[in-house]
Length: 415
Image (cartoon, rainbow, N blue to C red):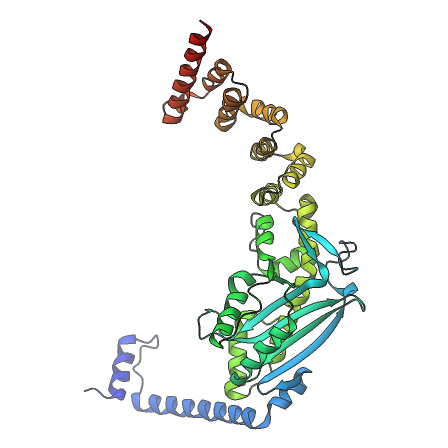
């Protein structure tokens, strides 16, 4: 069996180093071992100093937090509503505890809970824990957003964190997150399940701002991450922000080695996420009311309303912007008219599009004459307007045969 030294020597020869010289195996190996030993001693000393010199209480003081249970810290911070980004253009959205209309749904602003998490991993499996849980409410009496951040300083603090979160929430609260339906709430539900407790987040009404943001801007922006939405809609550019993807490593550094320097950056990142949620909620509401003012995708917004059976909102939005609609937008508007049984304006659009050879519009006109007017001759005449390339498919043949049969039946009745 080859020794480690022999294997390294063989690998160096096979590498054919650019110097063209074979390394002195013994001397190089000795240097490598010396360097590795120095690195290990330095790292060991750094870790040892961190572990022995910085306690949980010290971390709480460093973060401006308090130890509320073994392994759990709480930091509370308030921000004036007047300073929250995005409110300048959104009137009295947060002026009082009141009912508002958010994309066709009635929501009480006093029941809003903004929530964001940082985790020990990004996979979301059963081994992933929430190491930082941030939640915020609006205090209308003092016009402030109150942010509460629960930081897990030890594994043993998870049970207390879950209990505090349950006590913080009310049954009629409305949860506001960004991608929370896919990541945050399923992860929290899993942690509550493993602790043999009911998850208080699961039954709450949930507004996930990622979905309406993506619907309105996925064709306009490079991506729809929260950081991008902040820049585009709120004009907020974070400085020296720690990416959320680094939070698991920062938490691991603290728990294993007591390295605390970057924990404050994780707390700041989470805090900005929560403040951004409070700013984006009224901004997204404004986007869906006036999409053109925010350079949103008008047709996607209208189809979003349509997909949720808010046909009046979709129709009004398209009518207000009819002068800039393309053929696809006109087809959607005609569909809204059809849903509302407003046949005259729908027919006007179909006739206009049929002159451009739009098969869907021609078929809709034929259906209108056949089923609404019972005018089978006109329906057949319109069906014959289809381009030659479409006259060989089964749908065309079946419609033509059916109309001819109905016309024959009508003739036999009259004779």
